[in-house]
Amino acid sequence: MADLTDLAPLDPSLWDDGVRSVIADMQGRPLNIHRQIAHHPELLKAWWSFRNHCVHDCSLSARHRELVVLRTAHHVQSE
Image 1 (tube, rainbow, N blue to C red):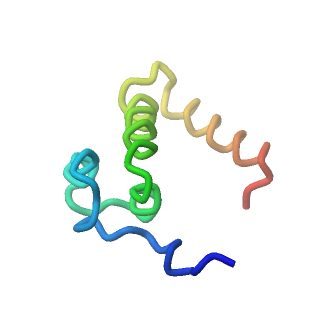
Image 2 (cartoon, rainbow, N blue to C red):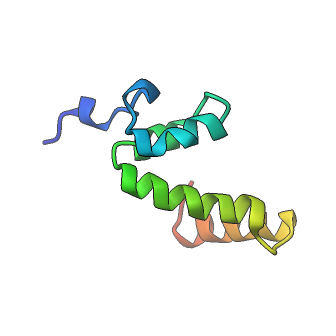
């Protein structure tokens, strides 16, 4: 069984230099999801690009983006 401390969100002071821009983008306060993914810097870099596209550069309206999120959550049976 994995040690649960291995699953703890990574403190931003321990982040790889290649993903420190996420900390700046989040005004010094990354969310726990960012801190969790930071254990895998290459994944965080790829995910951050995707996230920024969805949040800032997407052609969908805010309403349609939220509908996509809700539909996806329903599809995967997320609470």
